[in-house]
Image (tube, rainbow, N blue to C red; front, side, top):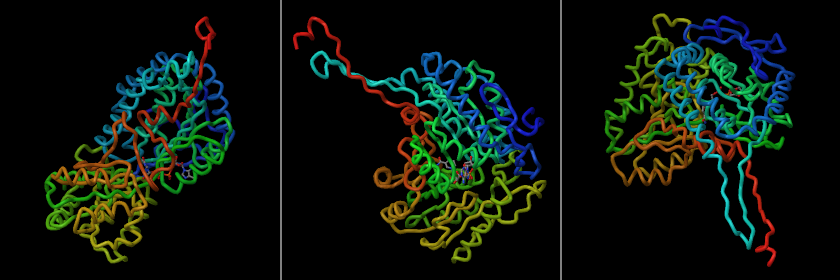
Length: 494
Ligand code: NAD
C-alpha cells in the first residue's frame, strides 16, 4: 500500500500533496505488533495558515456551485470508497487494532453518512410564508459558513470524519481535517480517493499533526466552525477556546455507559449483546458498556454468564478472521487500563475475570489485554466515575428500576444508557427518564444511524448541534431571514 511505503505522510492542501514544513514527526504503530507503519508529521502553524487560505479561496466558488452539483463528487466518493473497501478496512485494522469485521462495520456507517448528505438539495431547504403582512413575504435560506475544521480521535479513523465531512461540503463549505496523529493512515488514503473525485482544489484539505494544528485552527479568524470528537477534557478545552474566538462549535466527548439488566431480560441474548458492547473494539468505543447494573434477580445469572462470555472471547491480531478482539491502541493506553483495574481492586473490587498480562501467541509485543470483569466496585469510588476506554466491565447491583435510573442520572456522563427487559412499561419509563443522549432498549451499542443525530449529554457533549443528519446540516449552515415586499398596483393601495 502506497500510504505505508511513502514516509513521512503528507498534507493535502489546495489539491496538492505537500510535505509538512517540519522535521518534527511521530511514529505510527501497529498496536498488534508494535512495529512502525509510517511516520506522521506534526505540522506547524504555517501549514495550517496555507490550508486556511486555500480553503477560504475555494469557498468563494464552491458556495455558488448549485447544491445538486455539489453532491455529485459525493456519489463518486461513495463509489470509490466501496471499490476500495478491503484496503480501507485493512488500514484501520493495521493502525487502530480493531478486527476486520469491526472495520467493515465502521465503513458501513461512514458510507451511510455520504448517502444521507447526498440529500442536501432537500435537507438544506429553508422555509417561507406568503403574506406575513399585507403584500409582504418572509423566507429563510440556509447558507454555508465558510471554512470548517474537523478534529477526530483515534478509535474510528474512518467513520468519525464522515459524521461531518460530507455534510459540510455538500452544504457549500470548505474543510480542513486533522485526523488523530495515532491513526493518520486511513484519512491519508481516503484523501487520495477524495482527490480522484471532481471536487475542486481547496474544498477538502488534510493537515496532519497534533496540538499545534488544533490551537492554530481554534485561533484563526477565518475558520468559522470546529467539529471535534475526543476525550472530555480536550473537548471542554476546545469548546471553551473555540467559543472565545467566536466560532460555532460541537465537541463530542468521553463516556461511561451503564447497561441495566432487569430480571426478566433474556439471559442468553442479553449476555451476548452486553459482551459485544463491553469488549467489541477492545472497549475503545464511546458507546461501549462499561458498567452493567443488575436489578433484583438478574444478579442470579448475569454476573456468571458475562464472566464466562468475557473469558471465552478470542483475542489476537485483528487481521485474523477468527479473532473477536484486537489490542488497545498503545503501550501507554494498556498501562493506564491495567493501572485502573488495579485501582478498582484497591478500592475493594474483585476481578471475576482478570485480563491483565495475557499470553497471546504471536502477539507478544502487541498491546493486548483480555476482557476483564470487576465486581463489588464502590459506587462512589474513582473507577465508577472514570472512563477506562478498554475492555473492562464493572458490575454493580440495585434492587429496583428506579434505583437503576437514579444511578444513571447521578453519573456526570451522558453518552448512552441501555436497558434489557421484556417489559414495555419498564422500557418506556427508562426511555423517558434516563438522562443520556443515546438510549438503547435491548441494544448494547445504541449508535444512531446517519439520518439521526449522534447525541450525547452532560460531560459527554459540549455544544448544541451534534454530528450526522439534520443536526449536521443545521450546524454547517447559517439561517438568513428575508422579509420581502414588491410594490405593484395592489400593494400601493396600503
Ligand atoms: P483525544 O482527546 O486524546 O484526542 C482527540 C483529538 O484531539 C486528536 O486529534 C488529538 O490530536 C487532539 N488533541 C489531543 N489533545 C489535545 C490538546 N491538549 N489540545 C488540542 N488538541 C488535542 O482522544 P482520543 O484518545 O484520540 O480518543 C478517545 C476519546 O474519544 C475517548 O474519550 C472517547 O470516549 C472519545 N470519543 C467520543 C465519541 C463521541 O461521539 N462522544 C466518539 C469517539 C470517541
